[in-house]
Image (cartoon, rainbow, N blue to C red):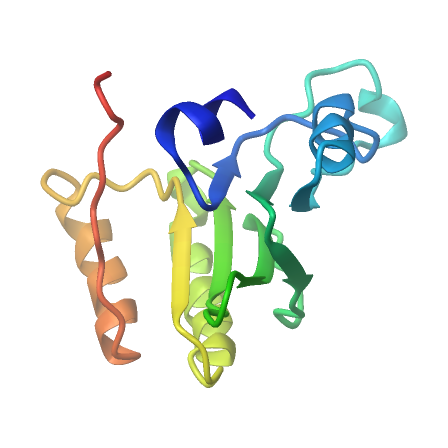
Length: 165
């Protein structure tokens, strides 16, 4: 909630949240009037005491989040998809947290392409947000694969960096 206030955010997309279904942080946000759509990484019985890696969420104050079905799930990434209704605007926000394992890179691009093909037909602006673990200026092979997938569907890549302040 401090981030929304301090940075005057409308929507906050989060990856690697490491949260469970009963997260007190998101419960507090909801009780304070924030809309939250999340997809916690489900733990198995064997790892109930371990750190819950992965998980994604999108949150917004005074805004309506409407979950949107993205079709079949992927074993390669966590995802949450939601319409964000604010005033007369209703974009679709997709938060993706892929595995950083290079051994699954081919499957990641296949699954990402299939996901985006299902979503580009929406009659709404589409924002795909995530920590793709691809350095566009250094990881030439994977950067080219990402560009190829997005360009084939008429999408653009906007690269951002953390705010130094």
